[in-house]
Image 1 (tube, rainbow, N blue to C red):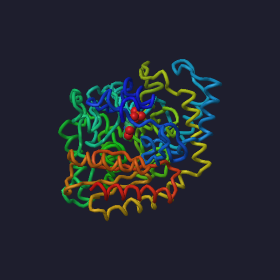
Image 2 (image 1 turned 180 degrees about the vertical axis):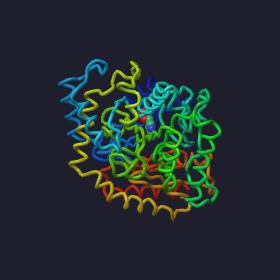
Image 3 (image 1 turned 90 degrees about the horizontal axis):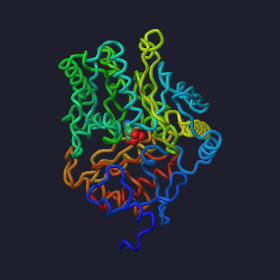
Image 4 (image 1 turned 120 degrees about the vertical axis):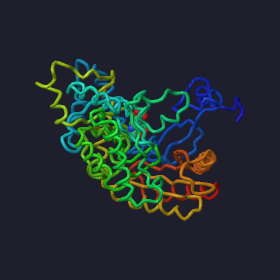
Length: 450
Ligand code: PLP
């Protein structure tokens, strides 16, 4: 399209917007497609092209678009009380949402600190670990163990904890206290069974702790499913085994549920009910407001807090906070979102429909270009390769994924092209017919490109 034919939005975006993971080569030359509105599981471009939102935005629009209950709650709260300083006041919405979330979390994770999104939630959790161990007089216990292929955010610290930080160009190497374990991706296991692979991963964790000394390791930070790293589902029993090891060495287990919480796996939180682990700390964001307004948070165990609060506080304070912690409008959206979940019985819907979703995506395995399909709840990905069954995607695989994405877009489906993966994690309101439509489009695009 010649520059003169660009819409006003496209011109403005080209000239002034910078986007996440901005391709620096095309800065000022290309703008992303602009969306004008959304309805249910669909979004529409400025020129009226209707698309199924395959990744639910960024795994966040759980109840879909155009939900009037959430919109009204936002408008009401903005009119009633648009802001309060969380340093010296609180508000009815934040208190009510904290109470409600505390009933949803596993174990005694009853204390909620609200943040502005997922990165600040994980950052807060890691700052708490630092505070906790300093307060307990063990200043060397600061190491953070993470996995390659994990993703935890875009602040300096959370990005360093993400597997990808190793390869991001022109950033300094992560701090030495961050230790990387292997990705729990069975395709990287060299043909081991699931049980054997679990033992290999456990041994690697134990060896790392032994080599560095448990007195230097403060936390294990893990997503239940490594979402942005490629929808990687660890071997059965992985989280429970890792938690046992953490307990043995007084290492805090942080479950990063920024993607998996709020229904994505059929539960409010997936850690315990789906993955069999009660963490010490859980982080959440995205689905808590179905993406209508930004909000994230951290749920911390009472038992942990008791060790550094009250008579154990030593007169100190946890020096962590954001201008928008517990923002009344965001928390009102969170409360309305939960009501919509309940009205639509969304958790049950996800439990019921995820079998169909799994079967439908697995049905694409018959295509020669498809080498793996991984699904948990309503998170799925179809892994494609062009030439052979390489484990690590090469540049041409990425180009192919982009081509599949472009074709899908033309046919009315947004997929998230992650390396050589087509990621589908739709709004939780999705129906069987809509799942069929997604798979039909994917099938056509993959056949044409691979
Ligand atoms: N943690 C996980 C597991 C995520 O997937 C993400 C974002 O995708 C984040 C943290 C960062 O969240 P945000 O982008 O809201 O800061």
